[in-house]
Length: 165
Image (cartoon, rainbow, N blue to C red; front, top):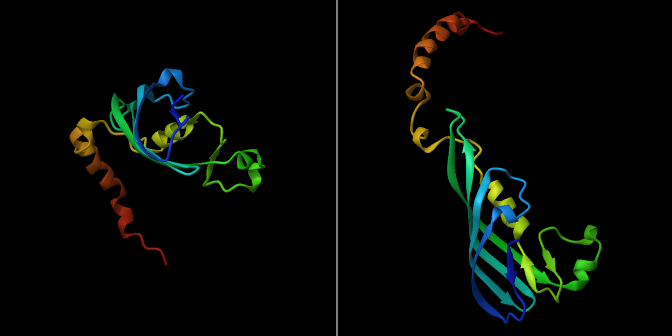
C-alpha cells in the first residue's frame, strides 16, 4: 500500500517521497512492474489534507507497429484533497459529492494506492509505439508496403470518378 503517515501532523507543508514495490500492491494493470515512486508535498490546513505530487512507474508495452516489447516510464501528476470528517465517512455514499475524499478524523495514515494506480493507468499511451519507431513513417519500417500502395491505388482509381447524386 502507498500510505502517507498523518498521525500527529500539524498544519503546514511536508515533503513526501514514497517507494512501493508493485508486487506488494493489488494492481490490476499487468503492464506495470518494479517500483512506484511518489514524490511531492502534502499540505495540512485544519482538517484538510492536500497532496500535490508526481508518481512514476515502469511499464512493459507492446509496439503497435512492430509487435516488439519495450519498456517505458509512465509519469502522472497527483492532485488530491482529503477532508478529515468521520461523520461524512459514515454517511450514506449516495448523499456525498464524488469530488471530495473523506477520511476518519482519527486516521493514522492516508492510503493513496488506488488513486495512484488509476492515475498511472490513465497515462498509459493509447498509441503504443516503441521509441525507435516514433519518428518514422510506416514505409520506412516496412519498405515492402511502399510497393503495394501503388497497386492498391490503381485498383480503386476507377472509383475516384464515381459520383453520387
